[in-house]
Amino acid sequence: MNPSEFAIDVQGLTKRYGDKTVVDGLSMQVRRGEVFGFLGPNGSGKTTTFRMMCGLLTPDGGEGHTLGYNILREASAIKREVGYMTQRFGLYEDLSIRENLDFIAQIYQMDQRRHRVDLALERLGLQARQHQLAGGLSGGWKQRLALASCMLHEPRLLLLDEPTAGVDPKARRDFWEEIHKLAANGITVLVSTHYMDEAERCHRLGYIAYGRLMALGTPNELVERSNFVTWYVTGEALNRLADELHGKSGVTMVTRFGNTLHVSGERELELDAAIAPFRTNSVQQWMLGKLQLEDLFIHLMGKAQDNFE
Image 1: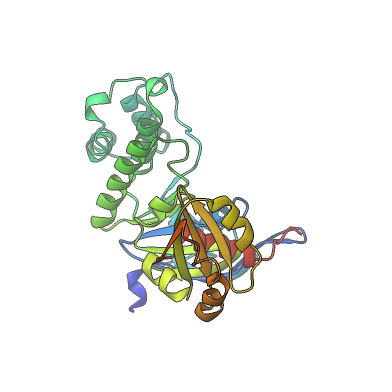
Image 2: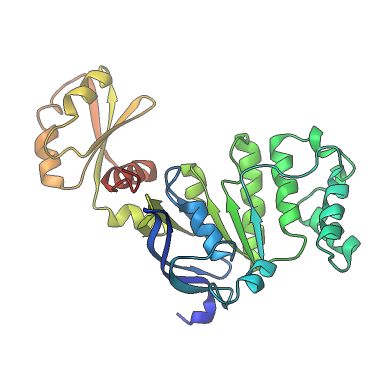
Protein backbone atom coordinates (compact mmCIF):
# COMPACT_ATOMS: atom_id res chain seq x y z
CA MET A 1 0.00 0.00 0.00
CA ASN A 2 1.17 3.53 -0.81
CA PRO A 3 2.48 5.23 2.38
CA SER A 4 0.29 8.26 1.57
CA GLU A 5 -2.76 6.08 2.24
CA PHE A 6 -1.86 5.83 5.92
CA ALA A 7 -3.14 8.43 8.37
CA ILE A 8 -0.96 6.85 11.07
CA ASP A 9 2.24 4.90 10.49
CA VAL A 10 4.41 4.34 13.58
CA GLN A 11 7.20 1.90 14.40
CA GLY A 12 8.57 0.88 17.78
CA LEU A 13 6.76 3.49 19.89
CA THR A 14 8.03 3.25 23.47
CA LYS A 15 7.22 5.30 26.56
CA ARG A 16 8.69 4.85 30.04
CA TYR A 17 7.90 6.40 33.40
CA GLY A 18 10.81 5.71 35.66
CA ASP A 19 11.58 1.99 35.45
CA LYS A 20 8.10 1.13 34.10
CA THR A 21 7.58 0.71 30.34
CA VAL A 22 4.02 1.86 29.64
CA VAL A 23 4.17 1.39 25.85
CA ASP A 24 6.65 -1.19 24.58
CA GLY A 25 7.76 -1.14 20.94
CA LEU A 26 4.32 -0.56 19.42
CA SER A 27 4.10 -0.55 15.61
CA MET A 28 0.89 -0.07 13.64
CA GLN A 29 -0.69 1.57 10.61
CA VAL A 30 -4.13 3.12 10.21
CA ARG A 31 -5.56 3.80 6.77
CA ARG A 32 -7.09 7.15 5.85
CA GLY A 33 -10.87 7.17 6.26
CA GLU A 34 -10.76 4.11 8.51
CA VAL A 35 -12.51 3.57 11.84
CA PHE A 36 -9.83 1.85 13.88
CA GLY A 37 -10.71 0.41 17.28
CA PHE A 38 -8.16 0.28 20.06
CA LEU A 39 -8.98 -2.19 22.84
CA GLY A 40 -7.31 -3.24 26.05
CA PRO A 41 -7.66 -3.28 29.83
CA ASN A 42 -7.39 -0.14 31.94
CA GLY A 43 -3.77 0.90 32.30
CA SER A 44 -2.72 -0.94 29.14
CA GLY A 45 -1.17 2.14 27.48
CA LYS A 46 -3.97 3.13 25.07
CA THR A 47 -4.21 6.77 26.14
CA THR A 48 -0.42 7.15 26.24
CA THR A 49 -0.25 5.79 22.70
CA PHE A 50 -2.97 8.24 21.59
CA ARG A 51 -1.01 11.15 23.00
CA MET A 52 2.21 10.14 21.29
CA MET A 53 0.42 9.78 17.96
CA CYS A 54 -1.16 13.23 18.10
CA GLY A 55 1.93 15.13 19.27
CA LEU A 56 0.91 15.68 22.89
CA LEU A 57 3.58 13.36 24.28
CA THR A 58 7.13 12.71 23.05
CA PRO A 59 8.03 9.02 22.82
CA ASP A 60 11.21 7.73 24.46
CA GLY A 61 11.80 5.46 21.49
CA GLY A 62 10.44 4.75 18.04
CA GLU A 63 9.38 6.95 15.15
CA GLY A 64 6.61 7.46 12.69
CA HIS A 65 4.19 9.81 10.97
CA THR A 66 0.66 11.04 11.63
CA LEU A 67 -1.12 12.66 8.66
CA GLY A 68 2.25 12.78 6.92
CA TYR A 69 3.94 14.73 9.73
CA ASN A 70 6.87 13.35 11.71
CA ILE A 71 5.70 12.68 15.28
CA LEU A 72 9.09 13.70 16.72
CA ARG A 73 9.81 16.87 14.74
CA GLU A 74 6.39 18.16 13.63
CA ALA A 75 4.20 17.66 16.69
CA SER A 76 2.73 21.18 16.48
CA ALA A 77 1.57 20.59 12.90
CA ILE A 78 -0.12 17.33 13.92
CA LYS A 79 -2.04 19.04 16.73
CA ARG A 80 -3.61 21.47 14.26
CA GLU A 81 -5.03 18.58 12.21
CA VAL A 82 -6.29 16.34 15.04
CA GLY A 83 -9.49 16.40 17.09
CA TYR A 84 -9.00 14.74 20.48
CA MET A 85 -12.02 13.79 22.59
CA THR A 86 -11.24 12.63 26.12
CA GLN A 87 -13.39 10.53 28.46
CA ARG A 88 -14.58 13.45 30.58
CA PHE A 89 -17.12 16.06 29.48
CA GLY A 90 -15.08 19.25 29.66
CA LEU A 91 -17.44 21.93 28.35
CA TYR A 92 -19.29 24.65 30.28
CA GLU A 93 -22.62 23.46 31.66
CA ASP A 94 -24.00 26.99 32.21
CA LEU A 95 -23.54 27.89 28.54
CA SER A 96 -25.78 26.75 25.71
CA ILE A 97 -24.61 24.35 23.03
CA ARG A 98 -24.02 27.21 20.60
CA GLU A 99 -22.31 29.37 23.22
CA ASN A 100 -19.95 26.52 24.12
CA LEU A 101 -18.92 26.03 20.50
CA ASP A 102 -18.60 29.76 19.86
CA PHE A 103 -16.46 30.18 23.00
CA ILE A 104 -14.07 27.42 21.88
CA ALA A 105 -13.81 29.00 18.41
CA GLN A 106 -12.95 32.36 20.02
CA ILE A 107 -10.34 30.87 22.37
CA TYR A 108 -8.52 29.27 19.43
CA GLN A 109 -8.97 32.40 17.28
CA MET A 110 -10.60 30.46 14.45
CA ASP A 111 -11.56 32.32 11.31
CA GLN A 112 -15.16 32.21 9.99
CA ARG A 113 -16.30 31.50 13.52
CA ARG A 114 -20.05 31.62 12.90
CA HIS A 115 -19.75 29.41 9.81
CA ARG A 116 -17.69 26.85 11.74
CA VAL A 117 -20.21 26.73 14.59
CA ASP A 118 -23.14 26.40 12.17
CA LEU A 119 -21.38 23.59 10.33
CA ALA A 120 -20.61 21.71 13.56
CA LEU A 121 -24.22 22.07 14.74
CA GLU A 122 -25.53 20.78 11.42
CA ARG A 123 -23.03 17.93 11.14
CA LEU A 124 -23.91 16.53 14.58
CA GLY A 125 -27.66 17.22 14.44
CA LEU A 126 -27.58 19.84 17.20
CA GLN A 127 -29.42 22.74 15.51
CA ALA A 128 -32.73 22.13 17.27
CA ARG A 129 -31.02 22.10 20.68
CA GLN A 130 -28.45 24.83 20.05
CA HIS A 131 -29.91 27.19 22.71
CA GLN A 132 -30.25 24.50 25.39
CA LEU A 133 -27.86 24.71 28.34
CA ALA A 134 -25.17 22.02 28.20
CA GLY A 135 -25.80 21.16 31.86
CA GLY A 136 -29.33 20.01 31.01
CA LEU A 137 -28.25 17.56 28.31
CA SER A 138 -28.36 13.79 28.68
CA GLY A 139 -25.10 11.84 28.51
CA GLY A 140 -25.63 11.04 24.84
CA TRP A 141 -26.20 14.66 23.82
CA LYS A 142 -23.22 15.79 25.90
CA GLN A 143 -21.04 13.34 23.97
CA ARG A 144 -22.43 14.68 20.71
CA LEU A 145 -21.62 18.23 21.81
CA ALA A 146 -18.10 17.16 22.79
CA LEU A 147 -17.65 15.61 19.35
CA ALA A 148 -18.94 18.79 17.70
CA SER A 149 -16.34 20.81 19.61
CA CYS A 150 -13.62 18.48 18.26
CA MET A 151 -14.84 19.11 14.71
CA LEU A 152 -14.78 22.93 14.80
CA HIS A 153 -11.33 23.18 13.20
CA GLU A 154 -12.24 20.49 10.61
CA PRO A 155 -9.59 17.94 11.60
CA ARG A 156 -8.46 15.09 9.34
CA LEU A 157 -7.99 12.70 12.28
CA LEU A 158 -10.22 12.09 15.29
CA LEU A 159 -8.87 10.42 18.44
CA LEU A 160 -11.74 9.35 20.68
CA ASP A 161 -10.75 8.01 24.10
CA GLU A 162 -13.64 5.84 25.38
CA PRO A 163 -16.17 8.37 24.04
CA THR A 164 -19.35 6.50 25.03
CA ALA A 165 -18.50 5.50 28.62
CA GLY A 166 -21.64 5.88 30.73
CA VAL A 167 -23.93 6.50 27.75
CA ASP A 168 -27.11 4.46 27.19
CA PRO A 169 -27.23 1.86 24.35
CA LYS A 170 -29.38 3.93 21.95
CA ALA A 171 -27.19 7.01 22.39
CA ARG A 172 -24.12 4.86 21.80
CA ARG A 173 -25.61 3.51 18.58
CA ASP A 174 -26.51 7.01 17.37
CA PHE A 175 -23.01 8.23 18.24
CA TRP A 176 -21.45 5.42 16.19
CA GLU A 177 -23.63 6.28 13.22
CA GLU A 178 -22.13 9.77 13.35
CA ILE A 179 -18.61 8.35 13.55
CA HIS A 180 -19.14 6.28 10.41
CA LYS A 181 -20.59 9.27 8.56
CA LEU A 182 -17.42 11.21 9.37
CA ALA A 183 -15.25 8.32 8.18
CA ALA A 184 -17.26 8.10 4.94
CA ASN A 185 -16.30 11.75 4.35
CA GLY A 186 -12.60 10.90 4.60
CA ILE A 187 -11.92 11.56 8.28
CA THR A 188 -9.83 8.90 10.01
CA VAL A 189 -11.14 7.83 13.41
CA LEU A 190 -9.09 6.10 16.09
CA VAL A 191 -11.31 5.09 19.02
CA SER A 192 -10.67 3.23 22.25
CA THR A 193 -13.53 1.25 23.77
CA HIS A 194 -14.33 -1.53 26.23
CA TYR A 195 -17.60 -2.45 24.52
CA MET A 196 -17.47 -5.52 22.26
CA ASP A 197 -20.47 -4.41 20.17
CA GLU A 198 -18.56 -1.20 19.41
CA ALA A 199 -15.41 -3.14 18.56
CA GLU A 200 -17.38 -5.06 15.94
CA ARG A 201 -18.42 -1.75 14.33
CA CYS A 202 -14.78 -0.85 13.57
CA HIS A 203 -13.13 -1.55 10.23
CA ARG A 204 -10.04 -2.90 12.00
CA LEU A 205 -8.96 -3.49 15.59
CA GLY A 206 -5.79 -3.44 17.62
CA TYR A 207 -5.63 -5.10 21.03
CA ILE A 208 -3.07 -3.76 23.51
CA ALA A 209 -2.30 -5.28 26.89
CA TYR A 210 0.30 -3.96 29.32
CA GLY A 211 1.97 -1.80 26.69
CA ARG A 212 2.24 -4.42 23.92
CA LEU A 213 0.16 -4.69 20.75
CA MET A 214 -0.97 -8.31 20.81
CA ALA A 215 -3.43 -8.54 17.89
CA LEU A 216 -4.23 -6.52 14.78
CA GLY A 217 -6.83 -7.04 12.03
CA THR A 218 -10.53 -6.92 11.19
CA PRO A 219 -12.90 -8.46 13.75
CA ASN A 220 -13.38 -11.52 11.51
CA GLU A 221 -9.64 -11.88 10.88
CA LEU A 222 -8.86 -11.81 14.59
CA VAL A 223 -11.39 -14.56 15.31
CA GLU A 224 -10.29 -16.72 12.35
CA ARG A 225 -6.56 -16.38 13.11
CA SER A 226 -7.07 -17.37 16.74
CA ASN A 227 -7.54 -21.07 15.79
CA PHE A 228 -9.98 -21.34 18.67
CA VAL A 229 -12.73 -23.95 18.62
CA THR A 230 -15.82 -23.04 20.62
CA TRP A 231 -18.80 -25.13 21.71
CA TYR A 232 -22.07 -23.58 22.90
CA VAL A 233 -23.79 -25.52 25.69
CA THR A 234 -27.41 -25.01 26.80
CA GLY A 235 -29.61 -26.87 29.21
CA GLU A 236 -29.52 -27.61 32.93
CA ALA A 237 -26.77 -27.58 35.57
CA LEU A 238 -24.47 -25.31 33.55
CA ASN A 239 -22.76 -23.91 36.65
CA ARG A 240 -21.74 -27.37 37.77
CA LEU A 241 -20.55 -28.20 34.24
CA ALA A 242 -18.44 -25.01 34.15
CA ASP A 243 -16.79 -25.93 37.45
CA GLU A 244 -16.01 -29.43 36.19
CA LEU A 245 -14.52 -28.19 32.90
CA HIS A 246 -12.27 -25.52 34.41
CA GLY A 247 -8.68 -26.68 34.41
CA LYS A 248 -9.27 -29.67 32.12
CA SER A 249 -6.46 -30.33 29.66
CA GLY A 250 -7.53 -29.00 26.26
CA VAL A 251 -10.05 -26.53 27.70
CA THR A 252 -8.62 -23.01 27.44
CA MET A 253 -11.65 -21.04 28.54
CA VAL A 254 -15.16 -21.54 29.92
CA THR A 255 -17.41 -18.46 29.77
CA ARG A 256 -21.05 -17.90 30.73
CA PHE A 257 -23.23 -15.91 28.32
CA GLY A 258 -26.72 -15.75 29.82
CA ASN A 259 -28.24 -19.22 29.53
CA THR A 260 -25.38 -20.48 27.35
CA LEU A 261 -21.94 -21.76 28.26
CA HIS A 262 -19.05 -21.19 25.82
CA VAL A 263 -16.35 -23.84 26.03
CA SER A 264 -13.23 -22.99 24.00
CA GLY A 265 -9.89 -24.59 23.22
CA GLU A 266 -6.88 -23.84 21.01
CA ARG A 267 -6.41 -27.44 19.84
CA GLU A 268 -9.49 -29.15 18.43
CA LEU A 269 -8.53 -32.77 19.16
CA GLU A 270 -7.57 -32.03 22.77
CA LEU A 271 -10.78 -30.08 23.32
CA ASP A 272 -12.88 -32.88 21.79
CA ALA A 273 -11.24 -35.39 24.13
CA ALA A 274 -11.84 -33.17 27.16
CA ILE A 275 -15.55 -32.61 26.52
CA ALA A 276 -16.40 -36.11 25.23
CA PRO A 277 -17.45 -37.51 28.64
CA PHE A 278 -19.78 -34.54 29.22
CA ARG A 279 -21.53 -34.57 25.82
CA THR A 280 -23.37 -37.79 26.69
CA ASN A 281 -25.33 -35.94 29.40
CA SER A 282 -28.96 -35.82 28.26
CA VAL A 283 -29.81 -32.62 30.20
CA GLN A 284 -27.44 -30.48 28.09
CA GLN A 285 -27.20 -29.72 24.39
CA TRP A 286 -23.86 -29.07 22.65
CA MET A 287 -23.50 -27.11 19.40
CA LEU A 288 -20.34 -26.06 17.59
CA GLY A 289 -20.28 -22.24 17.60
CA LYS A 290 -18.15 -19.20 16.86
CA LEU A 291 -15.60 -17.65 19.18
CA GLN A 292 -16.69 -14.28 20.60
CA LEU A 293 -14.32 -11.30 20.43
CA GLU A 294 -14.67 -10.85 24.18
CA ASP A 295 -13.47 -14.42 24.77
CA LEU A 296 -10.48 -13.82 22.51
CA PHE A 297 -9.46 -10.58 24.21
CA ILE A 298 -9.79 -12.06 27.70
CA HIS A 299 -7.56 -14.91 26.55
CA LEU A 300 -4.99 -12.48 25.13
CA MET A 301 -4.99 -10.46 28.35
CA GLY A 302 -4.34 -13.62 30.33
CA LYS A 303 -1.30 -14.37 28.18
CA ALA A 304 0.21 -10.89 28.63
CA GLN A 305 2.72 -10.07 31.33
CA ASP A 306 1.73 -7.19 33.60
CA ASN A 307 4.35 -4.46 33.10
CA PHE A 308 3.81 -3.19 36.66
CA GLU A 309 4.49 -6.53 38.36
